Image (tube, rainbow, N blue to C red; front, side, top):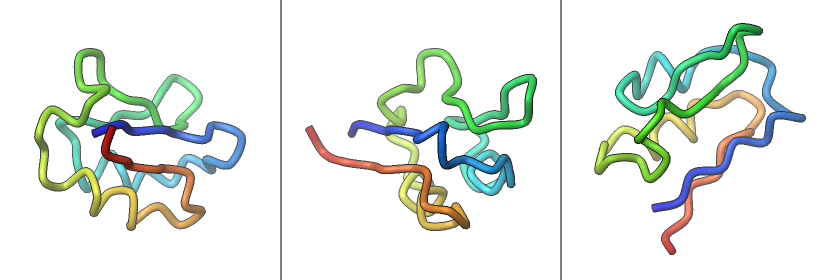
Length: 64
């Protein structure tokens, strides 16, 4: 899967990091980021739920 984070839309609510902490984190400014080596979701079933939990829909998950 391919995960894209629109950093111009992200408000730093942290819902993604709370929902799928094995894939998402927050950067030094509090905005969403992918953990190193987890750019493909690492098979985590909660990635799609994390995208749905984003209050501004800044996360897009697609299949290659």
